Length: 412
Ligand SMILES: [Zn+2]
Image (cartoon, rainbow, N blue to C red):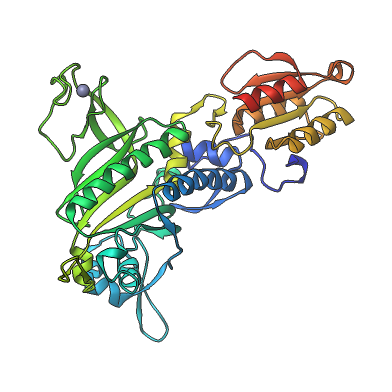
């Protein structure tokens, strides 16, 4: 992509109303624009990051048997009244049509997925089933000032699972947990899993996937030697300095964390509410056990900016960066075009700052946008075929042959 052709570009100054790093950097670097608190437009850079996050999630959900569908956001009030959510879910956006009918904007999809799957799941032979979708959702938040980390409108992946019995849910939870940890690790995040109470969804236990960051809103205790992690806002059984109850090797450390994913054991709450009965292998009619599995996509993008940045801008992990390479030409010449076309031909996503502006601005914009590699084409490149290569997190560039650079990316 050529920057000279783009409408959305980085700004010199951060927005004055931004209270969080992700809001400040994402607006200044030209990834998003805020329409109102908690509601954002995703500009070309921002949309590319969302698509990269979606791709990782889609691959891992498909790998564990998920089947992708797309459910609507506009729901009739009746399905929410059936489960009690119309009155009990305080963040549910409600609206009335001109024919005086009540509707909800989806904050979750149990009320849609359960009656839909009821049509297809009739016996134990049809179980388990794991439909999932990637869709915008709505929450009527009282306060929404955490940038894209807590939106009133936000993009989520949610998967729902249907099982013959509790043992099969427990078996699948372990598979889903591994897939979730893989998703976050591919995004460059080290996620920890905590157990918590089920909130609005059920009395049963839920699992939260937390990323350590000062921008989070959850207090946790974790162990350095094993995967033990507890949410101390919900579970007060542990305190700082306690010996790890799982491995006994290290003392529990406190941290602030942000939730990026969750799993709820829904039990039979929704299968009973929609009278979804399935024949077991003895011919008896039973209510399936359900689970739901969320990953906040726009939220995770915000958490990544909070975790990976410096005073110059964002430092994107390579798997979700909007472009792998940010190409800069010091003087506009044919060599830059040649390298731009070569990188594209090799399948490397490249942003070319071909604007006729001060090169200092090009350098500071490259740091702000945060692509993993910055390439500079100078006068010298014309004769030597060497370019200046700098990783975003490093201070010092090095001179490299174009082909060697491409080969190093391919073998990475
Ligand atoms: Zn431990």
